[in-house]
Length: 180
Image (tube, helix red, strand yellow):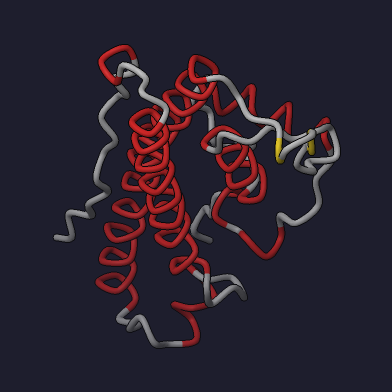
């Protein structure tokens, strides 16, 4: 059987607690993705990239006059961390997907089974026909969310008259798959 990764199994990763998300955030900060769930990476990135604060139940915190916001220094640190996590996750995803492509090519050559055969699907998909879609979707979804948050951050700095030179974000990778 092809070794699937937990983080890409979106349908199996819907249970979480504040404690599990915090544990997964610690793994994410170390760029360790093998024990992180899809829910864990998605929710942790969501909380890092936004300007708004959440409580321990993940609800937005309301204050008089609207929602509680991070100051720019904290938002900058969180957004930078999210970008760095994403950059490593994009590499992790690319490596996993390219490994799949290599293994699929070898499997087809050795068995003669096409990628539409029952045997191929059993070996690679293991009952989850969306697995490889989820692999790619996870990185594209996070990329889009981070891009929007980067735009929000820059617009907020500008509208509040903050010095953007104090908040230079790391460059976010563009995910590319080098199919052979």
